[in-house]
Amino acid sequence: MPDTPSMTVAEAMGSIPEVIGERLGAREFARCFSDAGLQSDFHIQTGNYVPEVALDRFLHSAARRAGDDFLGASLAQSVSVQDYGVWGDYVLEAPTLLSAMARASSIIHLHADNDTLKLRRRPKSVRFEYGFAERGGKGYRQIAMAALGPLTSIPRYFLGQSWKPQKIGIDLEARGAVRRLEREFDCAVRAHDSVVSIEIPNSELLTANPTTAPRRTTREDVVRACSGGPPKGIVPIMEQLLLQRVGIEDTGLESLAEAINVSKRTLQRRLDREGIDFRSLSLSVRMRRAQELLAGTELDVSDIATHLEYSTPGHFARAFRQSFDVAPSQYRSNVANPD
Image (cartoon, rainbow, N blue to C red; front, side):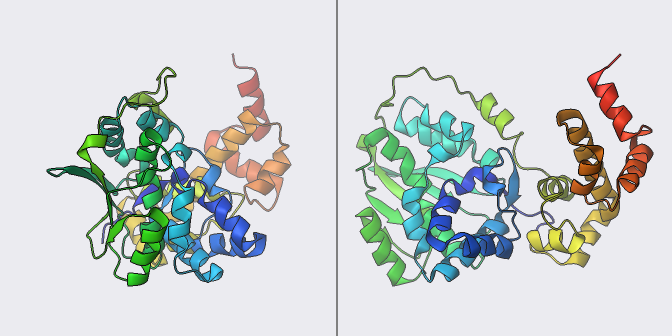
């Protein structure tokens, strides 16, 4: 098992949370997030990355609470790379369908660090193949079916919404899933495959981009928007998860370990190997967030202390001074009035 979890950009869920929320209602929807160890607004935080195991648990919980073992097939119709921000813009601004799929394959590592997206040429067609890094989870059945949404959204952008694949490949065994997907996509479905895939005839590959608007999104724009890609190493991953949760969710070691599907002891051991203990890491993240709030908001120091989970403003001020040799109020004044 790798030392670091596979991470994916939060926008990978696209409109799925909204669709599930409408179907389940607010209370059950919130429980899906709780089951996954995610904060409820994670999907709208641009540039944030979350563990893929959390998305797996989220969709597994949603399917169970909805009583729908084919939830992913329904969700496929709601997901498009157009929901992926700059990442999707770069893909859909390509001059042809073939180049759009090639672009997506070339930047998949900025979307999810261990997922794969490949083009396989065949005599009369191309297979566009997606491999999910955490495919062994309980929610993978839903993820596999839902993944057909982004895959098919690219050719549909170029060829029209009525377009359908020549064939779909799915790495699931249940015949029920095959029948459901055949109805959803109106094409043949091949089960027991090694990846999720769609097959596109060669005759359609050079279809020109239907949009005549200027194309300005570059690969470098994607790199910037995605913060260079998922965080590398256990310490940067923990820093990002702590920043997402501080003041909102449980930021304890046990909770963070659960979020990446390891034991508390395993996570501590991995941090020890990097020469840092969790308490120091948590303090560093809180102080970083304190600097951001002092410089970028008008919140009272007492409100910032509460947000950062300090019992009193005095305890917060003492920790801040120990970290930066300046009081929080003076730090704010220095930022507002630099020399």
